Length: 137
Length: 137
Length: 137
Image 1: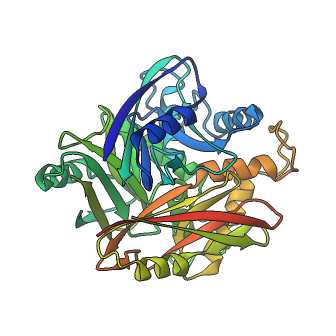
Image 2 (image 1 turned 135 degrees about the vertical axis):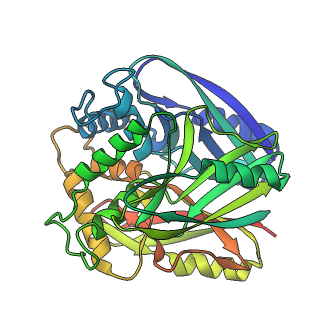
C-alpha cells in the first residue's frame, strides 16, 4: 500500500494529461501486480480516461460539455462563483472522481490509446489535488 | 479487509448524504492507510460525489437531470413501473455505481467540499442497499 | 491478487453482457472477501452496470445515447474513422472505464437486477480487451 499525493496547476478550463506522472509513481513503487486508484479531491474538476493521440478529441469533448451544460443557464440557482460555477459541478458529476487501473508486470496497464486526464471545469486557474493509491505486491 | 452493508431509506427522488456514515465505519475500522469502496446494489439509484455546502447545488443537479432525461419521454419503450422508470436507469448510468476513496492516516480523505450522496432517481420511497468495503493496513 | 484478461468480440454498437464471465472468475479464484475491479482498455467502448431483465432497458439506453450524442454532429472536428468516431469517445466518457464490485462469501455481490455490460459505441465489430483484477483473502 502506497499513497502519493500530487498537485496539478490548471490554467483554464480544459484537459491536463497526468498519465506519465501516474506511470512514474507505479514504476518506482515496485508493485508488480495490483491496482492504482486515482482520486481527485474536488467538485469542480474531475478525471477522465480519454483518447491520447489527437488533441481534437479533447477539444470536441470540451465543446460537447459546453453545449450540454451551458454556462449561465437560467435553470441554475447556484451561481455564487459565476456562470461556470454550477456547470462545473454538473460536468464533474457526469465524469469521474475516482478511476482504478490494473498494474500488470510492474506497469500501469492502460490501453494503447488511453490517457488519464484531469478535466478542469472552471474558467480560471486552480491548484488541484490528486491522490494516487497503489495496492498490490 | 472489512465489508459493511448499510441501508438508506429514501423518501423521494433526490440526494441523501451518506458521508458521515462512511466516515464512521472508516474511523472505527482501524484501517490507517488504504481504500474505501462504496458500491450501491441498484439500477435506479446511484452514487455521486458532490459539493456538500450549498443544498442549491444538489437542487440544480436534480433540475439538470430532470431536463436531460425527461420523465415519460416518448423515446422510451420500457415504462413498466411508470414514467420515471427508464429515466432512473439512464440517470444511474450517467452517474456512478462504485466510488473508491483513499484512507490516509486513518481518515477518509475527501476534499473539503466533497460529500458522498446516494442519488435516488425514482419518485417513490425505496429501501436502498449499499456495501462499504475497506482494504488496507 | 489475481489478474485475468479476457476478450469480448462485439458485432455492432450495443451492450454485451459479461456478468457470468466475471462471476465465473470470482467463483474459481477462491477469494472469499474482497473486491473485483473490471477495467476496459478502450476509448470507444465502455462499461455499464445496468438492469439485466428487460432488454428494452438497454435498447432505450442506446436510443438515449444516440440522441444525446448524434453521429456526424457538425460540432465535432475529429471524424477520422467516420461519423461514429467522436460520439464513441463521448459516450465512453459519460459512462465507465472501471467498476469495482464487492466479493462477499466468495460471490460477486451484485444486486438482483444488476448486470455488467460492455457498451460498444462503434458501429463496426471490434475485439475488446478487459482486465479483471481480484483482491482479497
